[in-house]
Amino acid sequence: MTRICYTVVCMLIIGHRGACGLAPENTLASLRKAIEHHVDEIEFDLRVTKDGVPILHHDAALTDPNGSQLLVQDHTYAELQQHKTDLVSFDDMLAAIGHQTRLQVEVKTGEPVAPIVVIIEKYLSAGWLPEYFVLSSFDPKILRELQAALPSIEKVVLERWSGVRASYRARQIGTKRLSMNQKWLWWGFISSMSKAGWKLSAYTVNDAAKARRWQRYGLHSVITNYPDRFET
Image (cartoon, rainbow, N blue to C red; front, top):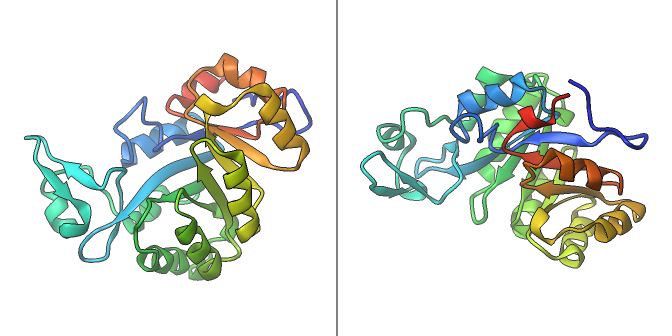
């Protein structure tokens, strides 16, 4: 795979929820599809079940095949598996996928941090390096807790529209990485952030031509549903 490079540093390609345009999101199949297309990082979402098991899932509720809604926090992992056969725990996912590429762990807003930290510390104790992980969240409280518990792992501040708010939160935890909704980005903003030393990522970008244009102005990375579109 050839990276999109117009400057000394190539733009990173990050698979969104694995490669959710190519396989069901936040599943082993989706993560493996992202690896197949040689992403630089895989992004996925974590929520915590009633019995304290971190699982790969985006929404607060799980929708089963008959349309029923089950709040993740109100059900055990075993109960939820009965309604979603490809649901996977964070621990089992790490054991299955390994560290073939860097793993960007998004902790969803309001989720408890402690069970997630326990799993990561388990793998660090087994010899995994801190740089195998990246930790991200929209929730500033979660980011502060993650920084306190796992200071050696890089953090990413997720923000929908405000560069001022994103950079303020980033300074609080000592990171230079920001990830913002591509709907609010334009070349001038990207250029100014890059010149100021910020590593800006855009989500969710499925247009490789747009990514190439923005990379010229210093975009650090894109999060995409379709990493295959960025292969040349």
